[in-house]
Image (cartoon, rainbow, N blue to C red; front, side, top):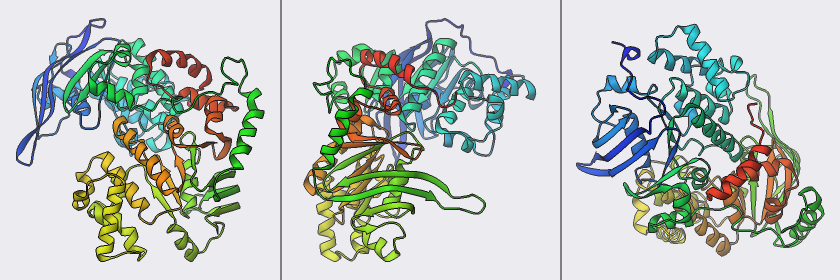
Length: 586
């Protein structure tokens, strides 16, 4: 009997529960002992409803998601019950699990670029899902794949069905993976951080799509996320987990407005809330003044900000940045005509959608990409045609904090050596002096000194990010470039890293270019914000003006797309968001 011939679980659309989890326990055999990852978890997933599971990294969220798909590794031991319809997943053999996945329960993964096969077209991968579970001819499977791409609102599906994953944008790839997950009309969809890697406008589109699809197909959704704004936007019920245990459950509104457990209260308190760090000026409160009519005030604010503060560290005037020609691929101009400046001690926020050129500017400031036009002065160095010698001198005063320290740190070096490596290469310190400086840097980022002999994989995400920050500060930089430095962290860890960043910035006084798509984080750190779109500056001004009196429609779209951790406020914002945001694929 093939997977397509396996009997389908007994479940009728419209029943109360699509899934029931009772007394679920998951342990992993690690280094000769059992490590509990989930302890006595019980909850239901109702048809047409979304249950969000939230908590810090390591709380057991993803373990539950993998358990529901039968995808746990061999060193896992599962107890309790997971029922999808009338089918018990715990103890099911591999053949039956293969028949179940996709047809009864399917998964939307966090990163579609790694979840989708790069050597097959989108159409082939969706058709393969259909033909694996249903007796369907290749032509019928292709027609159904086109229908699914239309369902998830991908433009021109007959053409896109022949595209490979790398030929699609991030939002299109996520939509294609959702289409694949919906191929066999599953009763239960497990979405593991489905919007974490997306910028805010694409995230808003995907959330709207998930909501519409949930109502249309009457499926239950289990949402795994650390983004409390996404939970407020999409979820009906919330499950809060800490160290493998469920500490609180309830409706979304109840958990947000009347949390009971101290951990839930601390988790909600740690969430950056757009608008909390700044407030509209009294001149605009209660008035009917539109963003366009407030431009005079905004321009005055810009002039005032530019005329105060320390000496200018970065001055870009109508610069263009290109990715060089490679083989038959012509040079690509990613930035064109951009002007901006950063003063000593200032944090400048650089925001925009994916592909807007944010990271390109950051890379060019450290000489990893060439300025081909305009004037670019970084710490007194002319970056247009800069020599290798001068570039080496510049890099001793400029540091970079990367988005994922796990991949930017050398996995073969203990973190003490990674932190001390810039000092050693610059011949600033060696021997006992180097050891003392490494310990001072660990103290600065609030890491225990005994961790210096640990390797990156032995640290948590927050600890690795602190190591990356310590390494960046090793040579006492005058300019720090932080590229999505907190986007991979859960909210509690992110909150502490942001506090630490602010303390170090005040103490050391470095200038900073903070690149992010998270406007709530940028609001906390930045005095000024530059908004980029497709390689050009759309808007530039003080934080309060950009966030509360944006002049440009693009900026208004960005701000409207940011989900806030308040269900009632988010419902109000949703109407504005849907009116302003035009889907990228339509």
